[in-house]
Amino acid sequence: MEKFSNIRGIVAPIDRANVDTDAIIPKQFLKSIKRTGFGPNLFDEWRYLDIGEPGVSCDNRPLNNDFVLNQDRYQGSSILLTRNNFGCGSSREHAPWAIKDYGFRVLIAPSFADIFYNNCFKNGLLPIVLEESKIDDLFQSVHATPGFEMAIDLNNQKIQLSAGENISFNIDGYKKSCLMNGLDEIGQTMEKKEIIQSFERQHKKLSPWIFEDLVV
Image (cartoon, rainbow, N blue to C red):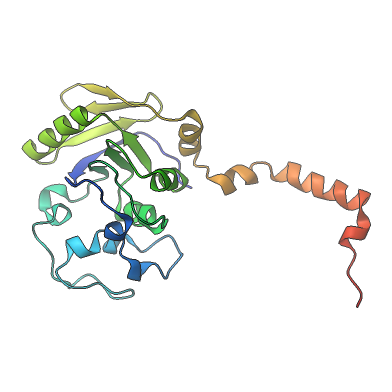
């Protein structure tokens, strides 16, 4: 998993509560488990005017010009600002895959669905929870300022705004460490590879009959 370092980027606003995972990545795209290639279909039913299908290029599909991600001012955004209960619905891990593949690294909301929230950390995304009044202020700033940017300092747990204001955020220490070191559960297990292999060798010596081939 890619390590999370300090990030500065354009903020894109999705001003909707209860955005579910089927809106994030519709069900017809769940056939692949490659973790990549989902970015063009992020928010597919909102971004396009036709129905998307797996394996079909999005290059010539008709765009919904009213949707924020299709507007010029939000191109290249890496921070997503949204509302309560983002990522609700089914527990599909394809949702954070699509968000990251599009180019987002940070999500900011008053709350996230639990499973989605944990899946973000497993895929190198930083979900930040802020109180609703702060979220309201940020939405106002984003709407008022084309190309509105902010910097995310994970180590010091601060959001730095261009006006000089800093907003602190809380994060579980274990999850923070995993993000900063680029480790999911498999990565953490592989850090103990030598210990595991040593145990296996010793176990084979002490209980060799377990490893003998069965003769029928």
